[in-house]
Amino acid sequence: MAAHNANGSANHNGNNSAHKNGVSKNGTATAYINCKNIVRAYTVGDHEIVALRGIDFTMTRGEMVAIVGPSGAGKSSLLNLLGGLDTPTAGRLTVGDFNLIDLKGHKLADYRLTQVGFVWQQVGRNLLPHRSARRNVMLPMMLAGTGWRVRRRRANELLDAVGMSDHAHKRPTQLSGGQQQRVAIAVALANHPQLLLADEPTGALDHQSAIQVLKLIADLRERYGLTILMVTHDMEMAAFADRTLTLRDGALGQDLTHSTQEAPPVLDPEGRIQLPAAVRSHLDEAARIAVEIRPEGILLRPEHDAEEDTDAVLQDILPHKNGHKPRRRGLRRFLRNGQPKQEETRS
Ligand SMILES: Nc1ncnc2c1ncn2[C@@H]1O[C@H](COP(=O)(O)OP(=O)(O)OP(=O)(O)O)[C@@H](O)[C@H]1O
Ligand SMILES: [Mg+2]
Image (cartoon, rainbow, N blue to C red; front, side):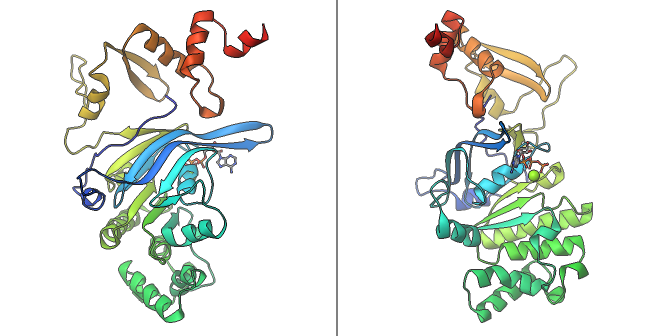
């Protein structure tokens, strides 16, 4: 269970722009974001915290994906990697034409400044307190070397787009939380980024302001053709996205509860449950289905033959150093001899 492929096409707000924007000439969806077996481990003192354990996922251009998961699951760690604020310990990561593993120095700084916009939960992290809303929006453009006239024109256009034209001269402390997040979105979009990363953008807002901010994000997505990855703990906010991924203990899953094609699964009085098609496709080749009760829920695992079954069980039970799965060859030797590889070489 170290790595989950978490791609899918559940789309429950009727918005198809992902498919409109991300489809190649031969009709196949092209990946704009490609995360392959991403691991992020932090060293704290003499022990390691594995925040991300082999994350695999792709996003097409124009898609909006929500990530939900408990505190400490690795959500911000993943966003930081995609935003070029941090580098993975292992794995491959590309966003458009940018290979984020190789990107260094001024190229990395340029990526952060022009290709990606951030909106954080903490309102104070998004805006400088001593600058007006307009001057906050102009700042990233100044850092990118844009001339004053163009900066001012773009700032005015963005403040209009987020409904804050009348407050352009106000400092953050003179604005409500929702208004500050609107300005923060304008700041994030200042340099025409294609990717918007939002880490709990509505976490500090009341319900009504949160809905308004999400509606605004959805509008801007259409208007500017943005690709959006948003962390939230609120399923109502996640419903604005095309699909929802779940992150637990550094591993991704896919939430299929709100797929438009099918009704949400329910348990009938006889104990039968109609599983979504995407789940059935993982199970229909299986000889048997193993059912396990886990702290986070119920696990259904396809079982194929005796050797595969034992491997799968051991891969879950054995400790995984750095979040990597043990190699199958080592496991098979372990199964035959009853000892791990290191023990063999020592004796
Ligand atoms: N710079 C760091 N140094 C050491 N450990 C870190 C660092 N950043 C994150 N971690 C650890 O990595 C794990 C994932 O953290 P992360 O901040 O990504 O979680 P999160 O899902 O964003 O949580 P929250 O919902 O509370 O924001 C946690 O165990 C955290 O303590
Ligand atoms: Mg976080």
